[in-house]
Length: 94
Image (tube, rainbow, N blue to C red):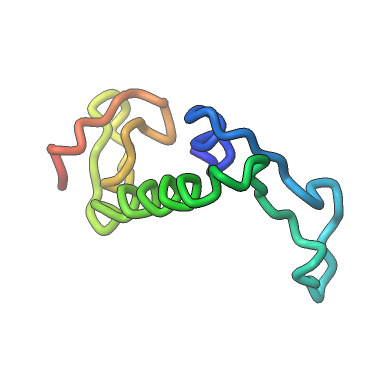
């Protein structure tokens, strides 16, 4: 899930600054796309939500899970198979 989706689902309005600009071989920070929160009072909450998401995604990344539907090997932090999109029981790790 993308950061923007996480925030929007929580009711935090966002926009992406410089979304349409292309990146050159020597990227300039001021021109890179940036996720921005529309309401400054939501910024702390938004940062915490992204931090929490990153921490949840880091758990289990070093193990592998076999998809019960198609047998594909997935990272242990996946809830669904990247190949068939079937659900993965993350408790059954290889």
